[in-house]
Length: 215
Image 1 (spheres, rainbow, N blue to C red):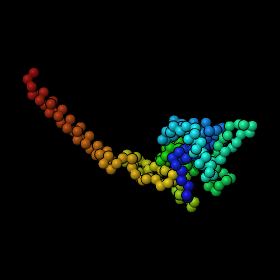
Image 2: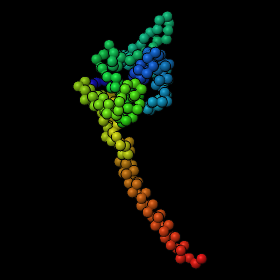
Image 3: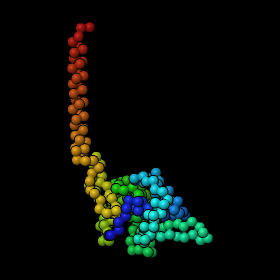
Image 4: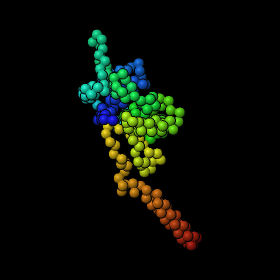
């Protein structure tokens, strides 16, 4: 796979896929609708504040690479845009509904656990349980024309590992906390236990002193 998007390009592609699935009556998207979708406060990470000229520039760049096409309106109607990234007659990249929903969420929100993906991607495809998500992730990671996702090392404090898409280059496999911070976090419970024990001992000593005082 040799497709690589910038963070903003990934957002535009993710938004076009999302709206194609969730609001097909409003798809393709006008420039204004696409800009609003990129800047949504819900289901986006990181939040962005792109203006229309910036989105137009991103669309133009993606169009030159044949990932987006313009649907010109008739009679002077507003031009609209649709993706050619996958599952179209213009390319060979094909995903199942479950794979496409997962890819869309990863493009929109970045690395996520299978449980998070099941909750968020279920609006675009049917997932009977988390194992269905894990099976789709395994397919995306192992396909001969991929890989398209990678499993990240489990971070301290997380029960499950997260998965990231590979359409923006290699993903740095680093934990969110620096080693010293992670060590401090892991040591925090033991320090807290010691402090609580010291407080209990002081309270017991104080009660003993009170008991020895004359009434």
